[in-house]
Figure 1 (cartoon, rainbow, N blue to C red):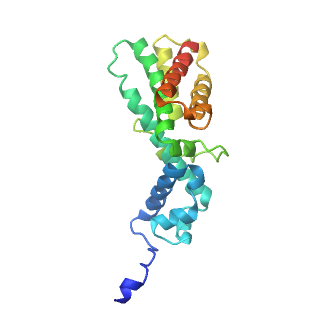
Figure 2: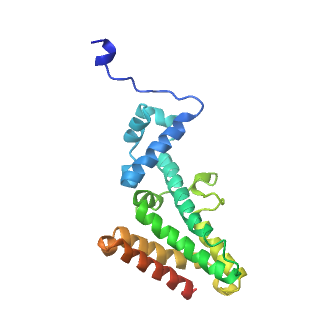
Figure 3: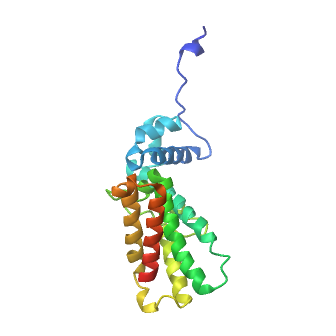
Length: 216
C-alpha cells in the first residue's frame, strides 16, 4: 500500500480566476436548499468547497456577507420561478385579461416555489431578518432584470395600464398582495396546512391569489 493510499487528500486552499467565491456561494446554496438558512454554516460551506475556513474571508468579510450572497441567489431562483408562470400569460391577446393573469402568475409562482424549494424559500425570507441586499447585487433578479418584488410591481403597473386597477389604489398595493400570498405560503410549509394534500394546498393558494386580484 502506498503513502497516497493511506493519507487523506489535501484540502484545496487556492482557486484561480475567482472560482473560490462562486464555489463558496454554490456550496451555500446547496446547503440552503437542503436545510434552509440555518444550514448555511461557514465551516460546512468551506468544507464542501474544499478549502480551509479562513479561505472564505478572501471573498466575504464575515458569515453575514456570505449569507447575503446565498440569499440573493435564492431570491433570483424565486424570481425565475415567477417568470415561468408569467411567460404563460404572454399568449393572451386582451390586455386586461393578460394583466390580471400576470398578477395571478406571480402569486402562483411564489406559492409553487415555497412548496418545491422550501429551503431556498426560507433562505430568501429568513425569520430573523438580515441586512438589505447590496444595491449592486444582481443575483436576486430574474432573467427580466426584476426581483420578486419588482415582478409583483410590474404586474400591478400592467393592471393600471390596462384599466383594471384604479391608479389611486396602486400606491403600496404590493404590500397588500404580498402579505396575503406570503401568509399562505407560510401556512402551507410551516403552519396547519403543511399536512394537507398538495392538491388542497394548491386549490387554497389559487383562491388566495384570486381573492387578492378581486380585492385590488
